[in-house]
Length: 114
Image (cartoon, rainbow, N blue to C red; front, top):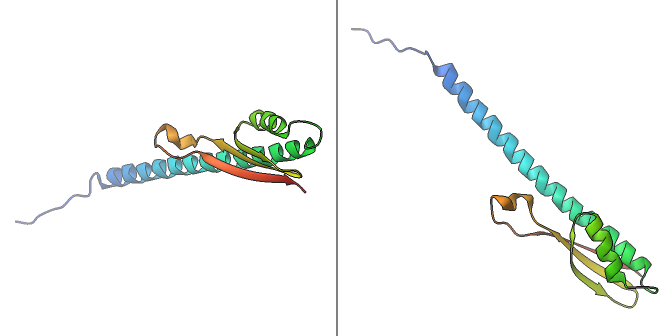
């Protein structure tokens, strides 16, 4: 008696496997892009906040000015250290993936002044 093996359905299994692989790759890429965008947002907010704070080092409260600029750019002020001629800022933002996976906050630093 001769055994006959059929290939019926093998293309369906391969198509489903490749589709799931494509979906997983797309989801992973989108998560990575969200994290990079959040990191860039915190860095831009830190840079702009430090520049704004350095602009009022002699005439006002640099931390209040920096905090206003940082919040306007969608981040949060973590720390503000003022010396006689410079300001050092740390900003933070929750990681977008931390809705599903507990991850630390994204933190960026900037310094402006002499």
